[in-house]
Image (cartoon, rainbow, N blue to C red; front, side, top):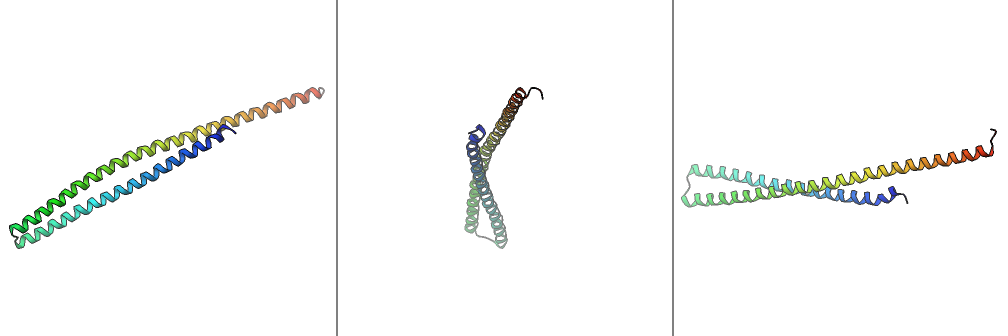
Length: 148
């Protein structure tokens, strides 16, 4: 079996690993989008809630009601801070997975390039061997037919 053929399984393994890493990247990117969407929803909810409180405040609020509104608003802001941290954590995961995929993809491409060079070398060697055989045949023919 030629060396280039033996490399087929190595190429397939590298390709499979790169594809798996690409799928992992797509998954974590989707997760980042989901987390960012949750953050945006929380921020939008807080803005709407504050608008509602402002409208109610114009009508007049008791101190107890105002405190409840304020406490709830603080809780939403805490949730926003926690979600912001979650988004940042997932963003770092995306970058880590992206670097891993890039490394595996580069390795796969490098193995393909090496296999290509091995095939070229094998082809050159086969051409040289064929030429040598043709030269031997021509030399033997000349020995058998010296006058031609």
